[in-house]
Image (cartoon, rainbow over all chains, first blue to last red; front, side, top):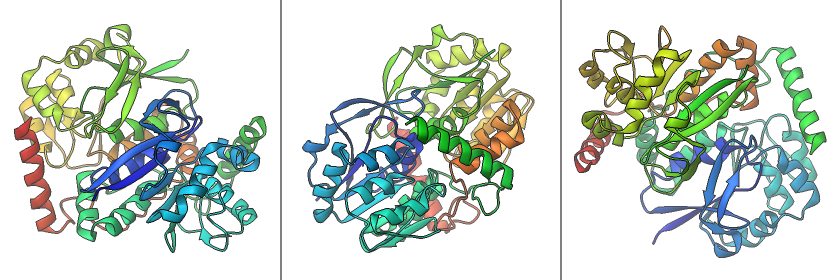
Length: 217
Length: 217
């Protein structure tokens, strides 16, 4: 039995939200990764500089074992409008998944699909508090497991989430082997990865940039 | 003046080697990322489950300001045969770059292009010692700057390298802001990212797997 892992794509996705976890999960024996989107074919990322091929349309993968929903600032508008096919797909597929997961603001899409009601969840630090609007309790942790719903903090947190998920899908030693294979012994040259440790002016500048980008839509 | 950052792609590339740094460098103002390959069009990764579009052929981007060469086990055979167009492209472009960089076994391709002669360099832990064959001094560090040549250790180390490079291309605060934007406050669920800390049986198992994969070619 192959475990189907559906990684959702949409125009404006933050590439690493999807592809950090991809690099981890593709190494788990007995799984098959399927990139799904509105239609099979090319999907552009948030910067418009990366184009990834989706293998299949959402409708073609109605019952994946694992769903992974990446983020991107565009998800704020998508969740607000609630009219993107990814939201219907998540809502329809979630009841039969083994794991329903998100990275970064992908949790807004889980929320819009009704998946976070009554659950603890995380997401990108700038928009985490907004998860309350979906009935979730926002939690400032890098990876949050609540039953079969797993949410990760911003962008790079998807790698940590995927390793934890690989351990559940297979074993701790599988996850350890994948971590060693990708030499994931992180050593950021700066200490600025969370607003609690970043200089206030950097947090303020970035927050203003995010607000303006969301405003532009 | 736009700084052109050429990220090389080839069949069998390890996706995260290229796309971790992409996610960092695409945020540096005044730069343009160009994915280059043998030809413009789709390129498949090492697992055959991810297809990325190359924007241009190597010949169309002869003088990028920055070169980034990702790895993949396939690079061992490519470097040995020395007949892949990426090697000629690196050799021709390197003299006029501001930075020539690699991630993981991408350093084997830099080596085959003659770029590492007399330099300190790193790469994926499993194959790092082999860099000696290219006249390099292999160094067990996550990121190695030697003049304008920058090499990173395995896969995930490209993110750390790209942040250090973003600081050089722009400023420390730019790099800090990018780090915060991608919430790069890593918290791996296991402590197994380097052979010095991994259980010996995991190192042995993974090494055997790599050896067999290289043997298969």
